Structures are given as structure tokens and as C-alpha cells.
Image 1 (cartoon, rainbow, N blue to C red):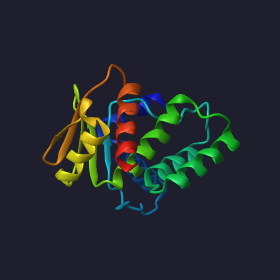
Image 2 (tube, rainbow, N blue to C red):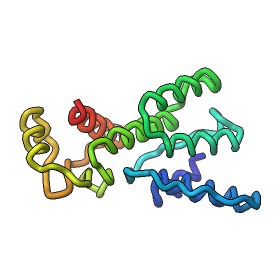
Image 3 (cartoon, rainbow, N blue to C red):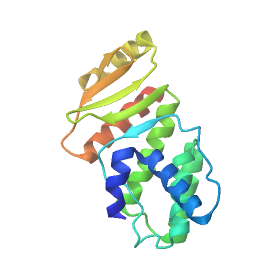
Length: 178
């Protein structure tokens, strides 16, 4: 729940899920499965968790965290979302943030993004970029209003809220993908 949020923020969502899965496997006397295919790290200071009121059963909650952390297809993400709505009811805001962050991670991975982070007053997207392509795209889509291009990173000022930052990142990634 909310008490786990601080742990998630400090290590990142995917790493937190991996550490949690390893700890549970160790307690059960099982060998933990190590996930190697997580390509985009998202390090944003925002609340995103599955509340106990929505999914009270710990095994179901852990399975959902693991699934969200490893999904690599937006269609499967939407199918999972619909399945959860059918089973548990409307998704609460804190859990909906997990879907948005997962979607952002999946889409950003298509662009060669390695990390999306909140650096306090600046949002930063880092990775390996074709500078000419990004400059042309930035000018043609008017993304230069917020985003500045540097070698291997893009930056934009943080918004006034977590919601504004996430929306800004989503719009940027969606615009670049087309």
C-alpha cells in the first residue's frame, strides 16, 4: 500500500518488483526468477501502487505488479486493464498511475530511451538518439516549447504537479512515435 510507496520511489518500480519477488521466493524456499529484459528505467517521484482496498489478496497483487513490470506490448497492457476492471471494478487513481507508467515505459522503449527521470526541477529522457532526426522532429512538431535536446538526453522543466509531468512525458513520447 502507501507505506510501500517510499520503497518503490527510492529504487524504481521495476527494481522494486524484482526485489519483492526475490524476497517472497526466498521466504518460500524457492529460486527467484531474475528479469533481464526491462529496458527503460522510469524514476519519477509520484505515487503509483495497487491499494489493498482494490485488490486485497497479496498473491494477486504481486502477480499484477510482476505482469506490469514485464509487459512489453501496449495491446496486452490494455487487455490486462480491461481484465482487472472486469474482476476488481474501476481502477483507482493510484493504480491507474501504474498503467500510465507502464505504457510510457513500453512506448519509450521503442525510441531507444534508456531512462526517464525527475531531476527535481527538470524532467530528463536519456538514451541513444539520432540527433538530426530528433532536431527535425522537435522543430516540425513544436516540441521545442518544453523540450531541449542535448547529446544523449532531452530535458524539459518540471510541471507544477506529478500529473502534469506524467502528461507532458506521455504527450512527448506519443508525438514522437506518431
